[in-house]
Amino acid sequence: FQMDITPESYLNLFPIDAIIYLTPDSENVLEDIDPKKVYILGGLVDESIHKRLTLQKARDESLQTARLPIREYMVKTINTKNYHSETLAINQVFDVLSTFYKTQSWPAALKAGVSSGKGYVLPN
Image 1 (cartoon, rainbow, N blue to C red):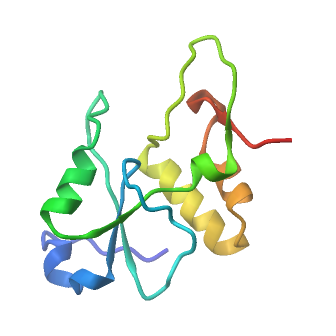
Image 2 (cartoon, one colour):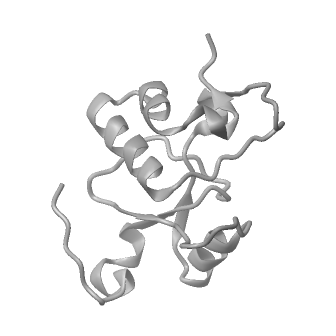
């Protein structure tokens, strides 16, 4: 993958209607990847999870939002911590998106990026 680093804001680089901000708090489910769109991986460099912070940032910037279809393709599993989270690290989101782009399969993509420690698994 080609990557460019710039101090310029994505809001100045791309048309606002081409940007989709990915956040686990979105009500919109990402169903497909449109190569004409720009996907922003909403993330924080922090030790804790701040609910709805990335969603609020996207709303403040009037951006479309979406979330990965974890609930639609995975089920909660019983675990010792009774822990279930749809919040993924940026590298995990990237793994999900790149695998989906290659395979066009959400189950394969989610298997590649969602660790069992998140409390979700693919159904049998």
